[in-house]
Length: 204
Image 1 (tube, rainbow, N blue to C red):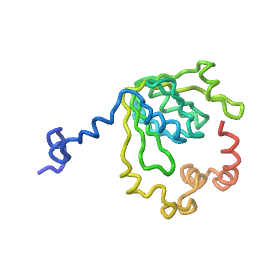
Image 2 (image 1 turned 180 degrees about the vertical axis):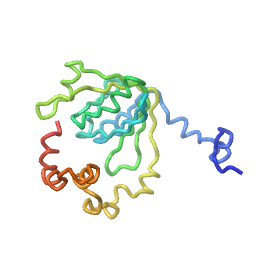
Image 3 (image 1 turned 60 degrees about the vertical axis):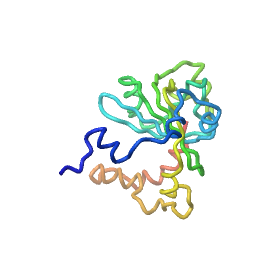
């Protein structure tokens, strides 16, 4: 007997049907409550899909960095990174994206699904100027669905609990990982020494 679920009927037999509240909370726009979550969030995870696979990219800035252009449209600045631009490549191939808004200290999260385009409109870029610098581009998301998610996963993980915080020294450093990935050629120690200054200089 197989233990894999392969049909919707099997899935429904295990999980049952969603509650009425779980269905009613899904909107095709941002109401006032959902807009409050967007404005309070300093961290968003952007998921995309393209011809070469999936991508899930973190985006962060001061709270409210994702702008609400209207109740059906969001704008997300794309700051300097490693230039892989996996999510941007995906958007060009398939506009479907999903956003997860996370707020420090808050258990509930906001999920937004929609279709994205990439803009380099000067007026739009200017809205996101930080420290005299503009983002490379802005990801504009037309909302298809928005709904909040309950706090159970945050509570289970104890994500915001000080007692659950992990010491950074307990994990491999970026330099150590690069050193091993390079077969021992890369100077990981130097990379780690210079990382704080390089990170600060490259934020914007």
